[in-house]
Image 1 (cartoon, helix red, strand yellow):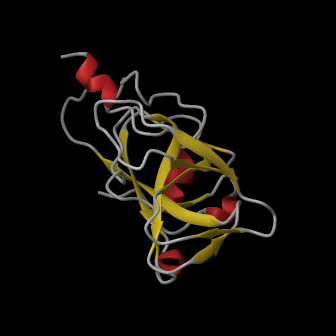
Image 2 (tube, one colour; image 1 turned 135 degrees about the vertical axis):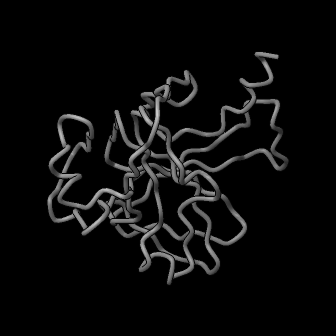
Length: 174
């Protein structure tokens, strides 16, 4: 089951953390998260799964930043979230999607116990000007049945900024 917005609000401070929390961003069954002002783009012409690919930082100025098709932009949410007993899921807002902006490639599924900022894997169909602080996506929470282990990966847990892929660390363990 998906938690209602009212239930999300009831669970705040206990099983769900959203900081900062703004009641105006609460929906009937989700909560809108906002875009931070910092983005990353990869600078290597070919990305390699086995290495730490180089990135460049972009700052979204007050007048906005033009995103171009064919480029992957990594962003993050302003909000820090944490869940102890629910599966967090992330989706783009329909108003954002109707402008041809995708906010995640495949990483809309979170794990029980995840704590941190959500990295957004943004790309666009048409050139689009974006602005920091816009309500860009929504988080919603599924209940989970049965015994479970909480997420405790050292790669992304308690992240502080935009997180490029750390897949190369998986190869180091082998």
